[in-house]
Length: 329
Image (cartoon, rainbow, N blue to C red; front, side, top):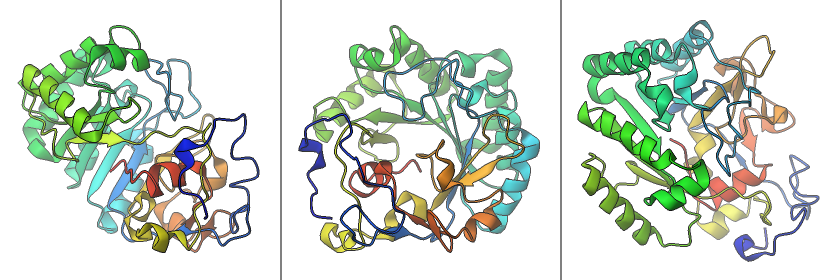
């Protein structure tokens, strides 16, 4: 790794040509970095790639028509919950797509909560969440499990103009109404924002603080868990490959990376069963499939894996996790 200023590189048709091909070596022939699983703190369940809206820049390309990732069922999730419980996993995260489009989401959340996990749901808090059956299910889960249930709501910017630029006209108001509904019932919430707007982190947090105060939401904009500002994953930018030497250069540890503490489960369209992936960022790349169970994933070897460790052979590994310091958990 010789260049760490990829964000200033000129946008080209294929700025990463030749990179991220060899699992073991970078384009320059240096040894590629890898990350082993330290502890499975969070198991992510991708409930399906369908979403009620189409965003301008969604890394998973969710939309009302994208069904590349099928709905996971309760029957498919329960064995994975049992595996995770045996491993001492703290949290089950539900992501999509829009999780509340999955007809079994409330049952899956209940199954996780009943087994003692904390549950985090990533949502846009729009119409799918507010359907009567889902809304009543959320209220019942909150009544039974309290603060062990949390929803992280996507609000891409603290102004309606920029949020709607990303998610579509009128989406800011609809999401704010969903947040109001959650706040009125005391359901624990967090906000997921973005860092693509040319403002400093301090400016962004101040803007969200104003919005939060105006709406009366119980979210601390200064808390990086309650207001998560995600780095962008722009595949059109030149991204440096991460080598073993980068940990020392960047003063970072592989043990702090997202794939050191999480795994994600997806089910591909028409697939017979779900598969385990290293993290939430690589839903479609079959080269990163680790097996059908957490036990198989722990022993994944060859290709993108080395005895369960993940080789950082994707631009998202560098841009989002190592350089961006991002984590979905």
